[in-house]
Length: 219
Image 1 (cartoon, rainbow, N blue to C red):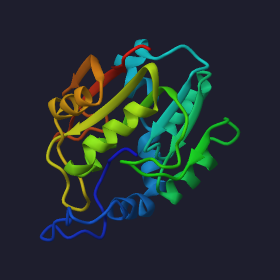
Image 2: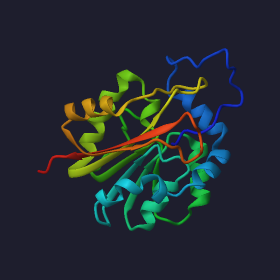
Image 3: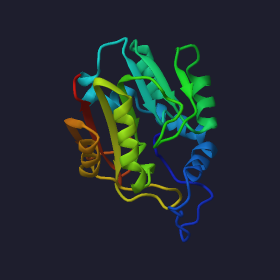
């Protein structure tokens, strides 16, 4: 679930209440699913994740795409021969994804971080593209522990981080890579690559990106 744009009903003088649950974030993505699918599709999987593609396991590995949105990354991974489980909590986003990418063998699951109770298998790769920013501070450690538990030995976790001031219309935080690395270390994951990109591919001057690639220890 990749963040873009602003909520059309938000008021600039009434910032989003960060105490509200994930439903507040879902409402934004539900309302804007069609528009966001066009924005996501304007940049390719390879453009977004090109600097970590050499780290991906060989196909046909098991892949978990968390916050899969309208399916750009899940579809690209499936076309590369991976077995993909795509987790997306917002029904409207899943519906758009199924229309855009029919017959690609993606398993779609309605589920939520930090617990992911509907996911119960081991994965060689877990991808979170612009998702971590929506987690409350108290949820991030639990989410990292859960993701680490879902990785097979030697599995890779890739988290892309939207940096810059959050918009006022929904729960979002500017989470630096250092915070992610602290949680990862506590969960038994080690850093294999940190990527910084100072430009935003959608042309937003106030937004930049970090990508953290983490590895679970071998058995």
